Image 1 (cartoon, rainbow, N blue to C red):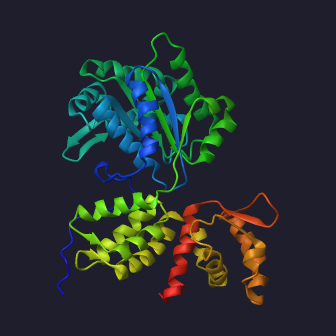
Image 2: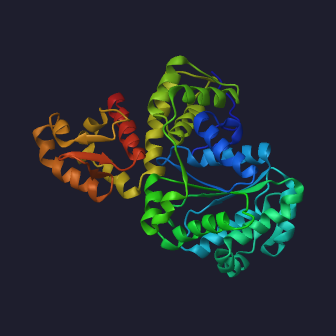
Image 3: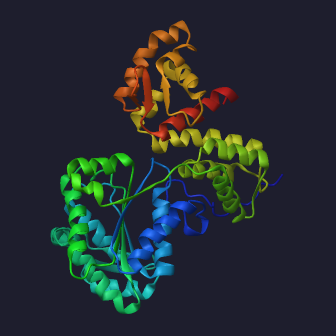
Length: 402
């Protein structure tokens, strides 16, 4: 059979999903639209925190919400990823750069913003603009000290275009959430705005795991009360089916029922895994119809990719140790949703040789922060579901002899 000519894959491992492929999350989006976007469009400032486990799709939700806010409610959306930032000045520089690149949903607003901030812009080309990093760094301290006035100026310059507010999303906050200056900055923006005579219609949205929000609270307790917290859970099977169907249909491909069940089961509701598995099946398939064999091979391929891309390399190597494989396989039998286990229940299925290594295994996993002690004696909890899923997916290799 002649292999099917492949075009562009409809999957985006490691990236937020394009708005045209976004599915599900209806209840959460409805809440954020009603309590957040619509309130800001009416003139009331709002602060929200999207929280959920790593790989659950927080960035995609933020991106889709910003798309709807700009398209349907005339908010000016600024998306600032904070990965790698180490100081408040770094945060300010990222926000400034994100503002320069904002306005994708309305080119006229983008042009107005770039004209205002032209001193930070270098050569323009088909691929966008280059940014004068030195100028950004030089002015970052003044932006950090006056974040709210800066955002108010953005709004003032766009107001006569029909803009009804500013929507600033701060994503990837892991590295800065523990800095007390960051907690004070966020709290200061929210409180100063609320107490002003004419509050800026601002939707301030942060994205992170629950631990990062609690980390901010630990640094500055009043942060506890400023956010409307939106919890993001794993996607339902119907949402996963809708996603896979829509993605493959966009490239004229279909999915057999048995293959669909496998894709959904082993993705476990995590968009990052869904994109990895879906992309693997896209390239494995040879006839435009994803069948059971395509899906199973894709799951096995994705297992290794999860380890390489989303599990710390030291952990990845330890988990692949032959000494631990049989123990991990027995933990994996509890399924991808079992985030806790007891030492006793696992020990029952171990050989005498494995039992001798079990304590060392548990201590190693705790040292690598894969596991932590639970609330009851002998209970252990996986710190990251992505690692838990990796162990589950890896167990398939031994079952199939791969």
